[in-house]
Length: 340
Image: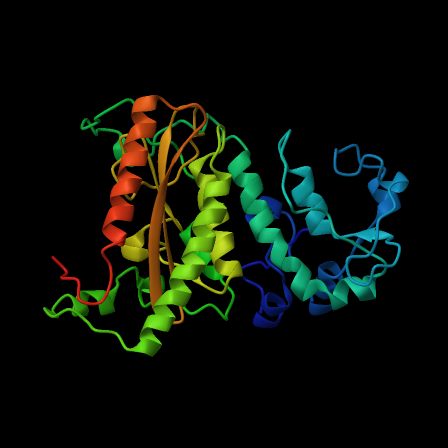
């Protein structure tokens, strides 16, 4: 059963409670004692009981041979948190996540710490794919009186649940964070701007930079594979966050001067540093994906521009020309080349 700890509960009750993703929380449930909370926390839903539910999640459950996610034996129970998230998926939603089945309560309890990691990213993907009340195209209120538009593009709404704070909270403890992760202010960068000389890095520092850039390249490739007609830039942002964190890195844009996302997506007339939102990419769009990662004290920063679907020859030519210019400049990078 879904539950959250009441604010007025004693500390022992709050410590025993498991806080679900917001889409799975119930305002009517509360923790009453440690034994009750632990029992609910490690309580699976029998597959046979799921058959009585008329939701799409449980349809045909008894006919499917499910194996235990923990030990591989035949499964008799399903994770209740997975079932709730699955039931909230919109129609035609596809994802790599799925309901986890277990052979017994003890097996579920044993693998809970590793299994629960999929709940929040799965819930975030569902949120992005679920239309908001009133439509995703509604503009954020901060643009109500803005008149400086240079084209037809307008900002759309952004996901409300999987926000900056939620992403910072679910970062693994092993991920090293930059100094602005908590405050939003990059103090080390502000101090470094006083330095008027070009830095010369040691071989060890260069290796650290190479590692960060290699991870950045892998993350950019993952984000690029998500670019297609109908996909929102918020989904590209989610893919970027998960790809970065899974490699042990921190998405550098997140909370940098309070930037709310893990990547910058600039569509059409947006020059750079665009904020991902719930607008689906359309046939003929041009989108720049700007990825930065922070790994073991070093940032790797790179970007690429993609054409979406069937694009005009003029726009394709623009992207190709810019890429050739980048290659020409990169070919000059070698020891002895002047900065200017």
